[in-house]
Length: 64
Image (cartoon, rainbow, N blue to C red; front, top):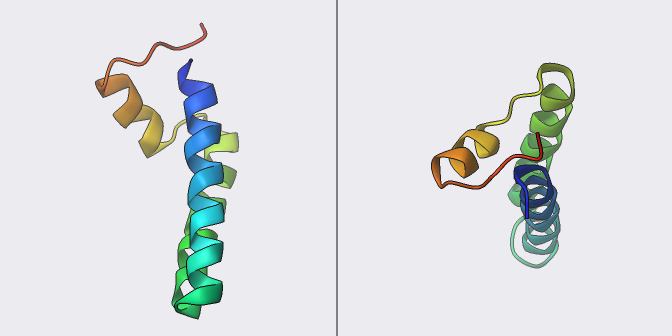
């Protein structure tokens, strides 16, 4: 898999996990959902995301 596919998988997993934690544990977890959303929005404009840097560091290949 490429960085882009891993990034979608991780972001989707974080959103789903934080929604479940917010519903069953504490509503403060919804702040994490908002953080992930803001990070995805800023990466759409800048084409940079901290998770992409971490994945590159781990040796995951890019599609380009």
